[in-house]
Length: 293
Image 1 (cartoon, rainbow, N blue to C red):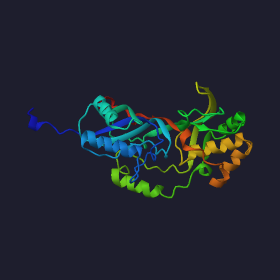
Image 2 (image 1 turned 45 degrees about the vertical axis):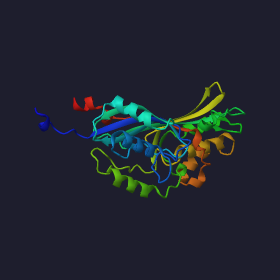
Image 3 (image 1 turned 90 degrees about the vertical axis):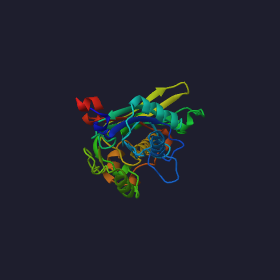
Image 4 (image 1 turned 30 degrees about the horizontal axis):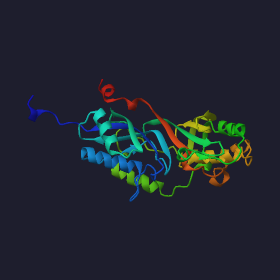
């Protein structure tokens, strides 16, 4: 076959896994005049390929929130081997953002719509003095905590519940969603499904565990669910800290959930202790070889 008659290269859907220190960023979502993870990734893709797709994340981490394995998806026309894309991105991205994996995947894959579960961790430092090199990544809690009470509260969130009481009001959310769909067309993309899950979420795992580190002891909240509302994990943690201080009883958790009012729950824990730990996917995650086989 002559070069002239060869078929044109099909656009390729990509899945990236990223880790980042969110301290110096205004969260994931692109914001005019602000440094964001999504904005940095889009700019890096532009410098490497000459294309500027808006990468779609598995979720929008807030300002100051970190990630161990955030997932992003986008489409590129430029043919580029996965290893080359990974190396090029890590050369041009800030050191506080690293791409740990780059894969070509099925065209139906979408980082957010295809996700079936996410796991978050929130880390509390329990020692009297927090080392400065750790302070950006933990909440140094100054109060004695009843960890057993906090564990009982955590268990009460397992199952399907309406988490309105633990959701922050986000008046700009609908506007951002409309703008995002207009920019990237996710509302009509093949395989995409609307995010209509509302405030009812299913939590599969919710527990506190102690971890020993060289710097001292951490108290870590680990929660895995099929979806999370804006500030939900930080509001759960803030409420459980209040229970650990004796300001809420374990029996109050059912009433807080039933109230469906943010004012019924406790304060929002600081962003610096929160990590997006991992994201899970179903069949649409298959790489290009699997999709073609």
